[in-house]
Length: 269
Image 1 (cartoon, rainbow, N blue to C red):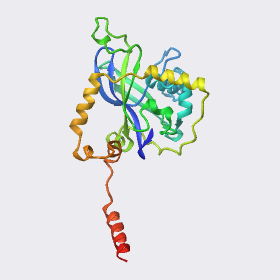
Image 2 (image 1 turned 135 degrees about the vertical axis):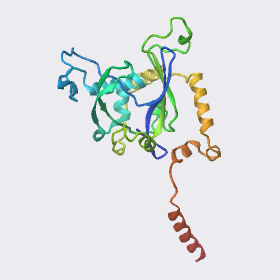
Image 3 (image 1 turned 180 degrees about the horizontal axis):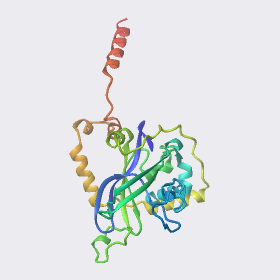
Image 4 (image 1 turned 60 degrees about the vertical axis):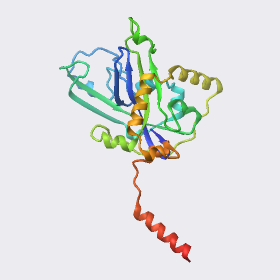
């Protein structure tokens, strides 16, 4: 989560371009499956639904790896620019869910949900994730390239391109109130830590490896969506980003009229 123009936003992937050429448009937070560390002999073992399950890697380790694998953010960067919202941690179990990947297979999901705040959205170190203005950006996983989809061999399994976007926190809660847990307000930011120059350069190089240009198909889809949803008020706005951040806010006209009467009275005197 980050504050953009005074409004809390959440980072989500809005488009995933996969190795087989399939393009999926869905809003998805950065996520990763926990890796199994030992075999499971009994699928009814209650230990499998334990938040500290001994059959998988520790979820805190997976959080760090997820932010690195999905967004290309090294551990040093995470410690410097992110602050965990401790009271927002949520663990839930979804049982007897029909699997999307294997139709007809009943599945149990044990889900850890963790929230992080960007310490300082104005810092130069967070420009790699589209801040401070909340710009979209893309990251690649594996050996993704734009020409591989048109070759006979195709792309290696597991490669993927993600288009990331910042969405208003209030809007997301309104649209997904039944599926998202309650998340506490962002706490006050603490001063960012300063890294030695060699480490800072190493982090910057790792971030550049993950950053990729937005593909033509994605750019075309984005322009088409913006054209479709563009309003005359937004086109004429002096600051389109600020307009987008505040467009769902409503004016309290009673308060406005009250101030107008006070100012009018003072000017008359």
